[in-house]
Image 1 (cartoon, one colour):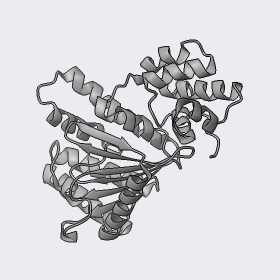
Image 2 (spheres, helix red, strand yellow):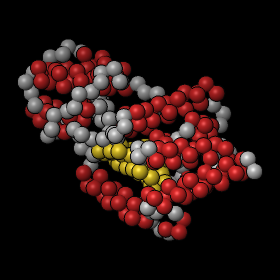
Image 3 (tube, helix red, strand yellow):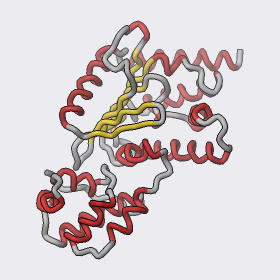
Length: 279
């Protein structure tokens, strides 16, 4: 297994915990596999903890302190690392997303969170929580916008999104919000920062009709897949499951419009929304 890449300890509590785990393991003269054996887990499991793609649970934190002789460092700090500004069902997926080298996502009902404008995100969050105080909505929108900072890097991660036509035609927040949201997606595509394909209505039945799908690849950890429903989410790294969902995604890209045709459609729809707002 390749060694873990350097993480920025200031980026998140989980990144700090992963960096400290790697330091303590190397100081103890143990490989990831050797440390994993002492915790009855795989070496790749340890690699995921170090890479920040897996959340450290209290029981493993206590075992790490015992094996590595770190007093109660990991037990104390795993509580801080578990705190998140994201909903509980999505927190681990969001943190994995931040260190992914490639993200492939199918969005059936809304523009993917990483591609949303603040106004679009606000309309979505308000629909989710119609009676929430405005301050709570502000925090949710800020957290969603913060995720898009991964695009500050001009090359990584790769984001390849298949967006269902239904998501583009569902007027979320009004015509002006939709026009700006689609223009934002167009801008990212034209800057060669993301790949976007539209799955049109006339594609008919397809292999992901039951819901959304997000595949994530990492430099130093096994790939993972995230499934999401209403108020629920599940992050898995089972190789068979990931392999099956990767095939599902490949079939989706085959059913979708080409990136060039998709861009033309999104641009045309953005113009239509703008015309509706300013006839």
